[in-house]
Length: 222
Image (cartoon, rainbow, N blue to C red):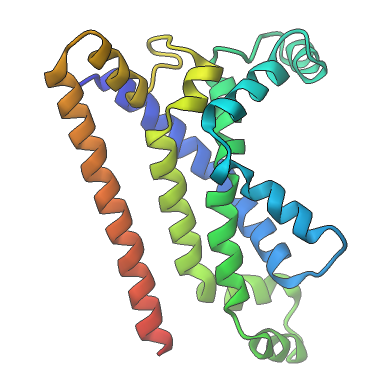
């Protein structure tokens, strides 16, 4: 087991969830409740990472964060460092690639809340923030937890975007998925098998937890 790569993957997954959790709640709620021009286009753009090959997204991020692009020049000037082949660049790529996993479950959860409940709370004089905190979040918590779990798991196993944007720098951008690839390339099947089995077990646990939460929510509302 490449523990350094595993801990780096856990760090990346944890930070991705930490940044995307409030993003998923905000935009998920916005898309669930608001109707506005261009909403379908925005939802389509958010869903692109679900169907676009990771290497394609990784390529565009590599170009976009590079020193010859406008965003790359701006970031290099602002932070005095390159974001290509760095952990920070890896985090940016992970945030963009996991947007649908963070937003869509939250959106579905907020959409499932009956409008009458929110309207009743507002009619009782409850301010919007309290409606969100005391009414909406408790009712949408299963979708929020699902978003967190799926985002964490997806980040932990991501390969294409990570390799394109971060490369393979030990301790900096070498994640567990890349470590598995390197072990296979080096014909170290034992190490690859152990790491692959660990990710497989974690994926099964993740999916199981997600379904348990979903089933409990159905029973509660049933």
